Image 1 (cartoon, helix red, strand yellow):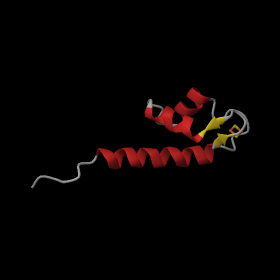
Image 2 (cartoon, protein in one colour):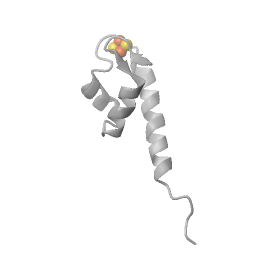
Image 3 (cartoon, protein in one colour):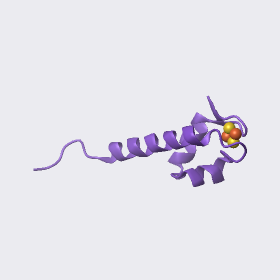
Length: 67
Ligand code: FES
């Protein structure tokens, strides 16, 4: 699904860029040209970024803590 119609950036490309280290909106803009025209996509992209950061943090937590 396209997130940025102006620059034809897909949801998948945003997640791929995030997993390559683009962990801020600025980094996504620089890597994908996301939001460089009308900017309508930035709110959705920022929400996706926050969810990806949360999921990454949650997945790095241990399942059990040693007593
Ligand atoms: Fe992304 Fe216009 S939709 S810059």
